[in-house]
Amino acid sequence: MDPSRELQNLQLRLPGLGDPRIPSPGPMKGDGIVVFSGGSAANNLVDVFKIVTETNQCALSYVIPISDNGGSSSELIRVFGGPGIGDVRSRLVRLIPENGDDPEKSAIRAFFNYRLPTDSDAARHEWLDIVEARHPLWDDISSEKKELIRSFLNSLNFEIVKRARPSSTFNFSHASIGNMFLTGARLFCGSFESAIYLLSSICRVPNNVSVVPAINTNFTHHISAGLMNGTAIVGQNAISHPSAPTAVPGAASSDSGDIDEHDSIEDANLPGSLPTLRKPNISFSKAAEEDLPTRIERLWYINPYGQEIRLNANPKVIDALDSAHCVIYSIGSLYTSIIPSLILRGVGEAIASSSIRYKILILNSTIDRETGPSTNPYSAKDFITAIAKACSESRGFIDPISRNELKAYVTHLIHLSGPNTPKVDKEELASLGIESIRVYGRPVYGRKVQKYDEKALLQALEATIGRIDPKGDRSRRNTLEHF
Image 1: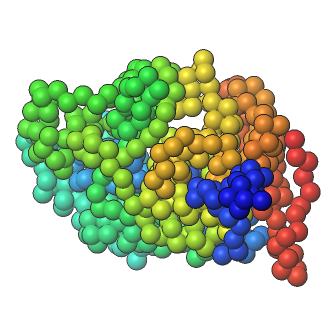
Image 2 (image 1 turned 30 degrees about the horizontal axis):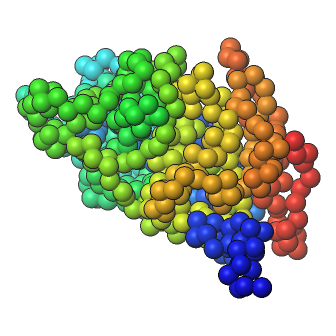
């Protein structure tokens, strides 16, 4: 037989052969677990991930995006520039070990989670009480930690005063003390990862757990989403939960009048930056959001002028993936919590490696603004396709995703079943080589949605990943009914 014809026949039997987008089998390289997530939603699963890593005696890395430009982060970005730090702070504080007998841990958790009042004048006065150590939040924090924390808050306060201008003063409304501390530490050290290390040490995050920003930077990086109708939405806050309910907020407008008005304000924004990226987003709603007119088609990073850019991932993200045997895409906003990390250079290639045996998507329990509209909601396959497309774009591929590529990025799906949950077609997923596991959910009081039962989710993850038995055999699998 003609050798070229024989190769073609072999490729028909083995669809991934010869396609650089589909990895060939390779050896296991590590035992770590990498979780891609945002902030608040995945915080509910931290205890589950903790048990899984303790059971498997491995490292756990949380990869967190830094593109958030909403809430109190938007004011810090406006005045000081730098990355969106809210989700990083949220995860670090959530990782403070639970210990009911240690009042200081509880006090530190309360301190870094505390938000100032909504009224800006009342917030400024309370901020000064905290900086001057007169606030009751300090009561159960030891003097050595108090003075260490205060030093960075005082450093930030000095910067706030120094940068005050007639056209721009800092708005303390609803400011997160944890975000203020991280910003003060970043400015003092000149290093985002040093600020994370400092807060991680104060919070006593376990040594085998790390919180890794998707991009290690002292600059602000924004995202933009393109809808299927050709519309572009600029900025994470406008994509997920805009300040005012509207179908398409923050379209990439460059009205010269708006630009001139914003350029007259002395803040950290570069002259000529898009007005949409410069306005404060301190107040917004995560509920009752209006549908987008069509589905989101893709997501990309932009510079301050709205031009698309491609960015490299934090080298520590790639190192974590190279040392991992499992990747988990956690619950959260698909296009603003997960995909901003996946589209970065180097991430898709690392995830596609066959040395990562388990690539698990924990499916959201409901459809949100990013995975609608409600007339055309995402199915489980749509979630998987969006993840695969992001990883493929990270690798520089622009061709449409084929069915055979999906399992290179997602091998298992864990999901709930019930009203308002995304549709899961088990047979279709099985034909794609993706295993689906249905788990028990608990109803959320007052809402027609469910949340994951921690015990059921833990069982599903252990059944998928396996557990180390006393003989060190990782191949043993727990039993769980797969639906």
